[in-house]
Image (tube, rainbow, N blue to C red; front, side, top):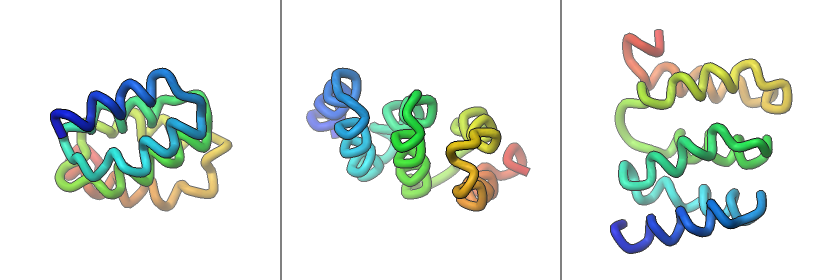
Amino acid sequence: PQKVVPVLETIYKDGNADAKRMVLQVAWMYGGKAKDLIFDGLRDKDANVRQQAVNAVSNLQGDLTEALPAIAKMMHDKELAPHRQQFLWLFARAGEAGA
């Protein structure tokens, strides 16, 4: 993770939407080391990138309380309306704060 995550961050920062989605497809495998990168994806301007970030968050292990503000905002995202049920599962993984 110490060598790969910085490379993924560079690709994400300099990439177009397709490159960002590809980065997010693998970022979750690096767990907490890639958490900030994945959370950046939740705030991306491209809806497809945001959806890929949601998939990445879904694959992260552990508590998702840190992601709650971004997830809550995405519940109102009209472009992601078909995925709202997936967001509800993410709330459940944030314990008391998610409730």
